[in-house]
Image (cartoon, rainbow, N blue to C red):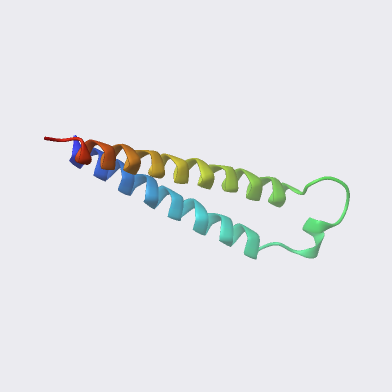
Length: 76
């Protein structure tokens, strides 16, 4: 059980890192055209979706590690 939680936590952290890097690359490609006009540009919408995914993966990683720590401290 502990090994599974450890691997799941590591996977969640790697997913967080992947989405973070993807978001940074997306933001680095921004131009002035993305900040003109009314409403958000497609790049800004993509950036928002990536940020939401990153927060989801971070929350999952924290939850997994909290469960792992709780399970390790309540044994025997």
